[in-house]
Image 1 (cartoon, rainbow over the protein chains, first blue to last red):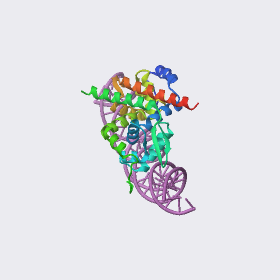
Image 2: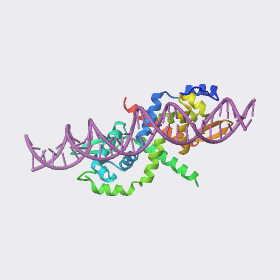
Image 3: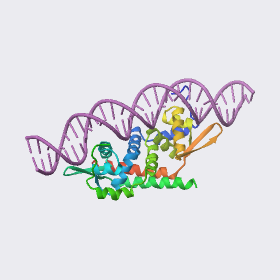
Image 4: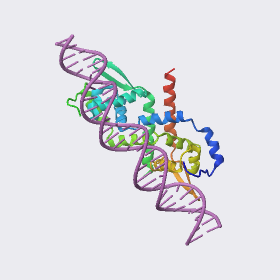
Length: 119
Length: 119
DNA sequence: GAAACATTTGAGAAACTATTCAAATGAACA
DNA sequence: TGTTCATTTGAATAGTTTCTCAAATGTTTC
């Protein structure tokens, strides 16, 4: 922390301090976005958006090791974005939440919006 | 890559390969979410959601060094989420995009949804 | 023009993340 | 029951990321 701390608008800062969410809620929001901020996880979610797949399928589809896929699936499952069921020897994964789709759509809209502004 | 690669449903995998976006678009989506996946950046965006603030204000409000705030503001500016204008000695930052708000709202809904399911 | 103020920048340290590799688990089938 | 198949797990590594500290930049004011 620096020697001298100052705010140009102390009254506004004090006002705004009251409406800032606590760290726990901030971390929850940031944590959710972190899950979908990795290209591999985005590809998995995109693939599963079309319908369920097993780990081996995903491995071939995304051209990655089964282990790498499995590690990421575990994270996606722990955070409630995908779910799994067993089918004989296979574990079949699918999206667990309609909201994932909604978040994606909003993001894609955002990106399209940014793209348009550059023209 | 492992010795033996197999898909339980090769026909489905081939089908789905066609609809997967290319790496460039995947990276764009993941990259956008990565920007809002850090607690500090979320707090900055939340604070600016109420209205514009200068760097020193944000530093006091979030109890972090001016330098740390400035580094994050640069990233948020480079990715088009905030914009800056000069006011005398101060740089005043504000949200640059309505879509940021929309993405946040969807995420919050998602988190509430997950929370409900646990009851 | 010099001094003070507000912010930016770059290099470096500490913490975190994604993947790999090897070994372990769990289900099916002979 | 032992073997094979499909997936999971843990440790290690390479690559990022965030923050700090010190120095640099740009603006106002004297």
